[in-house]
Image 1 (tube, rainbow, N blue to C red):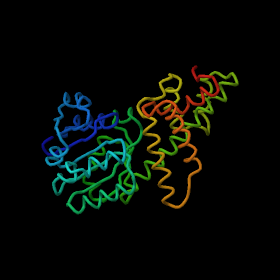
Image 2 (cartoon, rainbow, N blue to C red):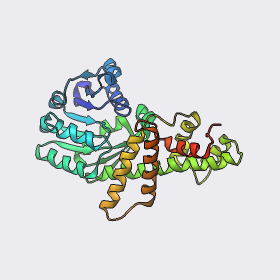
Image 3 (tube, rainbow, N blue to C red):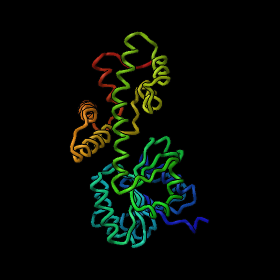
Image 4 (spheres, rainbow, N blue to C red):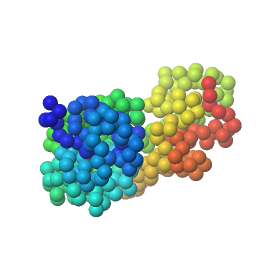
Length: 299
């Protein structure tokens, strides 16, 4: 049965890529992997994946190349470098990029891939590392509808809610607008919790009230325990937040307007990154408020 499945080459097996690749291996796909950090692939090799030493080697042998990379800089390097994917992938293959990328770069890659007889789908994912492990990601796929339908079984392994969103670049736009709402909510949730805490209301009561109200959100459901625990969700860094907010505000500017909330969120996350460093966890944007007020949000 597995012999009938396409040969996959998965690039980037960090926080998000690793569980996606693991689920594909468990589903019977022959998977080859590459990452700049060899150790990140150890668990996948134990599951049956094959390691390759270069992008060129992996791309040349693959029916489908998948990537999960930090952002447009890495996507451009991996896809367009001399030893990169599009220089070596065979005609008739398909590239599926699950990274959060830039609209213009997606469109450039689709056009170049097409000129080489290669399919290209952008497929940014959301719902965090825990949902990636469960194969329950939401996926926003932009690109050729027939290519999407051909590879739907792959998406069904890694995701639960899969949207074909039309033209190349639309996937990046959808992913980034959802991240806008995430980051604005992440900054605001600390303010709501602080108002209750400083009034003397038990924090668990404040949290339950938020979740039972019009103020509820994915952030309220998912992120508050990370604030209470004091680790601020290390699965996503402030550097990635700032990168995405730059892309988000850039899309609006390209459309001829500015985002007041997007601009404010970008300022807050940049301040957090300047204070705590680029590798600090995303919810350090709440720690800024805690330290300014002099009150830690711990039940």
